[in-house]
Image 1 (cartoon, rainbow, N blue to C red):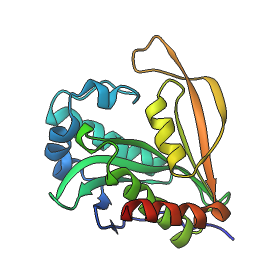
Image 2: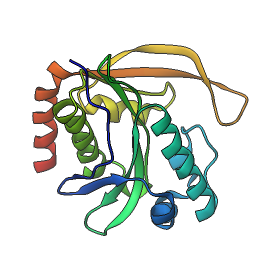
Image 3: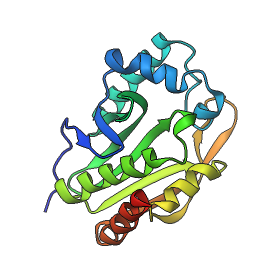
Length: 201
């Protein structure tokens, strides 16, 4: 079986809606949610955007980069307010190998440790495993980014190991060791049940 390529779609939950990232339409809300916040952008491979124009240009590069790797970029829209509060992507997609990565994720600081991340990941994983037929989803993050590692582990992902000196950080000087996590299709039903229970609590 070959997995299906991701195509533009909208994924709806109770707390968030994931819709194709549109740099022109989403940039104002995204900048208000986290533009210029050093802590939000600390572990991402770019400098914090300092204006709506900078975040618009960055969003355009994220859209292009995810699509070049066979994926998609989504704006994460909080349904209560109807405004984009971050973005996330499918990337590094191989339909033949039935694998993809969820990455380039950020949310405004007001939405950390809320239902936003849990439901966004639930929607992304459900679409990838259940609708598109992928057998493996992976995540990677900076070895120093313990908050991200804890968030990924809470999804039920398995920590696989560390790639040493994997990527040059945005400071252009220091090198990042990347921690890799994954979830397989046969692990998904139990993880889905736990994540749904967390959203109810």
